[in-house]
Amino acid sequence: MLRLLTIEWLKLKSFRMFWVVLIAYTVIIAMVINQAAELKLDLPIAQLEALQFPDVWHIITWASNTLNILLAAVMVFYVCDEFRNHTVRKQMIDGMTEAEFVLGKVLILISLTIFSTLILFLIGLVFGVKPPLADNSVIWEKIHYLGLHFLSLLTYMSLAMLLGIIFKRAIPALMVFIVLHIVEFYFVRRIGGSIIELLPLHAMDDMISIPFLAGKVTKAPLNGVTIIATVVAIYFLVFNLLSWLKLKRSSL
Amino acid sequence: MALLETTKLGKTYGSLTALKDLNFSVEQGQVMGLLGPNGSGKSTTLGILLGVIKNYRGSYRWFEADNSALQRQRIGAILETPIFYPYLSGVDNLKIAAKIKRVDKHDIERVIEQVGLSERKKSRFKTYSLGMKQRLAFASALLGKPEVLVLDEPTNGLDPQGIADIRKLITELADQGLTIILASHLLDEVEKVCTHVTVLKRGKLISSGAVDEIVQGNDELHLKSKEPNKLLAALSKMPELENPKITGDTVIVTVDKNYNEEQLNRTLMKQDIVLVGIQRIQKRLEDQFLELTK
Image (tube, rainbow over all chains, first blue to last red; front, side):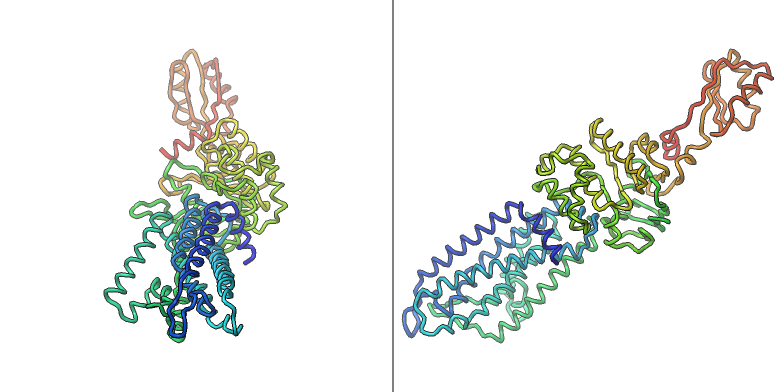
């Protein structure tokens, strides 16, 4: 594991696009959350600031969802770069296995996801404590949203990586990725039904529901989320298994 | 010990047969030249043996073990053009290769020194000349002191100085007893370096063996006489001489490598035929290759 992580680090440390996107992602998230902090919600009990414990976890993870595509795109470029430079071929010749190649990339996905989750955690803490708290235990009440964000982002990037490995070129892979979003949106809207709603992108999206409808914080049924999270975790395994199979069977 | 053994190796691309039932082996210490015209299946063969071409037929074994990534870590290889991360320095690229091969990082300095890249080791790969890129590829292949070196057209695209440098390096490595598999179009290079050759044509093996054996029996004798027609008639009666033909005042015959031309001169003298010139032309690998792949 450490060996693979070191190999990926050696490649990434000079991969400029990766660092530019990572900084852009962090700055944009902070800006979006800062804007959300200005929102006022009309709740039955009183007018409250949107970013308040415990709902802050729900709101920031939902707000950051739209930025996941930035991290997915950089992952596509990173993987496709290996094919463009034929370095994947060189690594196999040097004695790396297809499983190690995919595992190395998954370790980067996990690192990126940990980074994103940590950023959200820090932002949540900063904004959440702004109004004085009567009870500190409320801080951790909806912290599971960070876990859902972790799983959602990890699976989302795994799908992007799979497309990168299939298409080997970043632009076609990203185009197919975007088309998948549109196709799924169409199916869910037009056909609906519980099976359709378990399509990968919709399932990932559904784990963190829209936090406020008509000015009120919505409640997500936790048992329903558990089922969706399990499905998304299966997608994560399937996407990475398919990446491995594709590499295993294709000439490089 | 056979370092490499292939059994009925085959590969097709759609309706095109790139390789058909290829059987050959490479013993420890051999320098094997893999020869063949363009499209003969050399690169396909090496691609299969190095695990980058999939869906092939037949099998192969490195180090008398089934193929695995661990076996490949004992091989140093260069397939066609040098492949590295363009945005990384030479030394960082080698660090990646060393990690993959599980080689100690201290070995990196040794190979950089060996290929003469010390001064530019920290420059980005994309700023290297083609010769430097090829030398970095050699450095990567030599990491961890491999037991066998696989080289596919290692002098492709190099200038004369670059070719000379790489040839010198290959010769040095061969002299050190390293097993080398070398696919090259430069037959002069192969003849100088290789102990054995395997010749492919349209994906099929057409000849394999020691270089001496391959070129054996194909020397030419160029015999000059003032009476060439009389000489031709005399030579035509000698069964050990093949294909006698006349060109001006010279008669050319094909003889075995061990044939003694002094004895021939004496025999002709007894028949009152005086030779004014006798020259043995050794058939080279290139001639034999062209004949085989005709």
